[in-house]
Length: 449
Ligand code: NDP
Image 1 (cartoon, helix red, strand yellow):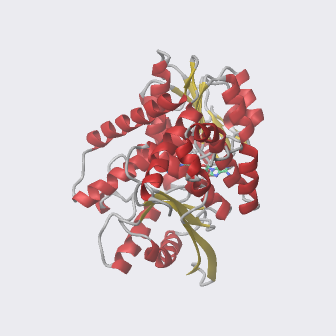
Image 2 (cartoon, protein in one colour; image 1 turned 120 degrees about the vertical axis):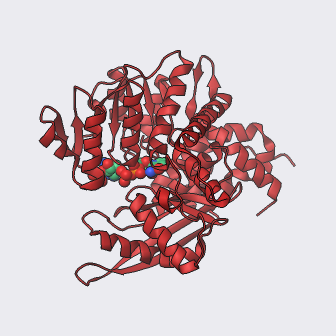
């Protein structure tokens, strides 16, 4: 019997019906299905086994209550999540996000993206994502600790070093990871690499905290090299000033680029003289130690400007690195970047460009790296942290950095393999199909599950 070819509209209608109101999840699936459906229609083994429909359904979703006591003795209740999306190519793996705005939609979209990203790293990691609608801002260290303990008091029964290995994301840095790991170890009475992003003293990997930002810049370096260019002398704007943004900035500066802007949830910092290493150290102190708004930069460097409630995208630049959060760069922003002659956009965050912005970048054929390829460096080093924990050893900083560069080069090559079109590389298509193939093939091999 001939199998009916997939149609994008019909497929998306079905998905929207099955997942009502989950707009970010619809968006993430649409961006992938757009490239995958023509590919699947030409490769009937995936069509026959209904791979795309199976891939857009998570293996399981865990939702739970998290109760804890704040510093004033009030009993607080939050909602915890873990979406165990796919273990086709390895144990579930993906970060934990603590942010007041998250809901199931957030974690489904992130876990879905994670499946392609983890596949692209070439390491054996499945996909998951989780977190809670907890706002870490303004909480004391003890409150953070109690919340992490309460969250892990439930999560521990669903994870393990061969089952599901959480890591950090927005609102979850090394401090939170160490508390989560501590609680897991205490409850299970085992010392295994079940959480990654730990401090080096607790079995964490060198370069993990730098890996996502560095990796995005290594990816950009590979894209530019294709055109015989380099980052040296290029003006760059970055959104966010958290983990990914800070280390993207550090690597850009090291490679001779000029960082003109960073941002946070309160607005954009514009320093026309460029943020050098010393200024970046100050930003790290403001955001990581003092946990203060970025605007404080002006107290020490008053010549800079702070554009309240503004994103950085109107600032003329050669390269843009959205590294804050999803849907932070829309169609108008994309047009502005193009009209200012921006040559490359590299997504350090997950899905920072809206569908409208996506279309502008693809139509204009600028260098556009989707997050699932460009920000995969973080999870790649998490994968290496898992290996080091299993082997009970620790590779040096230099060894890890070399491996990170190799992995980013392989991801870039995979994008070229599947995304090269006439005189142009479509990195979105390359990452989508390149990430899909490995997962889909193992699903075929494992049977109908
Ligand atoms: P952090 O929490 O360290 O930093 C997030 C930054 O983005 C902060 O500067 C924050 O501002 C800003 N921000 C958050 N929400 C908004 C918003 N709605 N509007 C404007 N600014 C906002 O997170 P990470 O750096 O770890 O993560 C950033 C992005 O990168 C996320 O999309 C994440 O999923 C993705 N990512 C992270 C990886 C990692 O290894 N950490 C790996 C792969 C992807 P403020 O300080 O004011 O809150």
